Image (cartoon, rainbow, N blue to C red; front, side):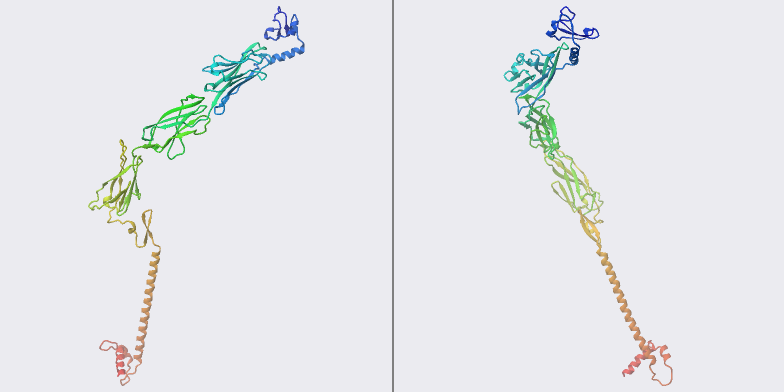
Length: 519
């Protein structure tokens, strides 16, 4: 029969003081222990009232799900520079039908691969808490235990912390659920994390400040990198850079005094680009942003032989003319700086042209050729070398200079014409036409034409005046009266007859007449 019954008769199917909930006439579906003395007065199973039945069903329904006991712990972060205590607090909440026996509240620590008991507590009113025998030597005389009271919390306070105090702890509670008639375990982890600011390295050594290219330099650094997860980084800072480059990060961490004290050694192979660089050792952990506290080495000198020399010509062109100047500059990367020497191989193919002197002088790595001549044409070789004791390198660069025949070429301002002005630009002569010269020429031409015109006009005027004088004398002859008798017409004869001496008659007459008049 359906219903909720309590039985106090030991001979009954149910035990004395137990509650039976009968659902679909199957009492075995649910059986819970819930004893009250008031129910023991009945000698048989007694049916509850309808109101109490509903209340009890509600209560049992709450207990049908997961266990209701909860507990809470928090991670503990301790800065070793600020605090030397660790407090582990386990707070729990439970229902009345959940029962915790003595010594069933425990703080444990993960040691190797399993949790071991550190401190054991009892619920309020139970036995006093105590440290376990196995870890008594570790925590004795520096650990305080506070048992649960009305606040329902188990507290462990560790003083004078050491590195062994860090790690993973957990609060573990064992209890019995009277509704489900089962035992349960609940636990919550708490990590103890030590933090410490990374400190400036106390040692940073470099095996040598001067070494040859492709050799190795030893770098030794020691530092208290703090916590958590500290390490040492070694950086390289190039000579002309302000951005450090990481070349090494430590991975082997040694623990001492709750922080990580790290000592590392690293071998680094230098290249010629490392010349003038310095190294930097920094102490790092997760609290650092960027480069942590650090020490720097002095700058290193990487010794290496010269690279391939390069030769520059000034002016930079492929051919030159006799009389020009030429400078050849040689450079090569090396440390220590290279010494430069020049050699020359003349090109002798001038076919009968007599070789002239090639004047040159050397200033440092520069070869200066002045007033170059035909015999300056050839191959020039620059050799760069330094003395490393065991290594040197010579590299040749060939330069061919073509020189034109001086009998057919001119150079500089000599190539400019009469109507051009010579100007130098970038070391080269340029001929520029003078704009005033055409104006002057035109002015001179106009002046000459004007002078010729004036001269012609003057001569023409003189000629015209002479013609007028001759015409006047002729008319005078025609009108002169004849001194001879008779009526002979003299005009025609005087104009046509010639004298014996070849003069025209009018000219002769005029002269005779003049003589007569003078007499």
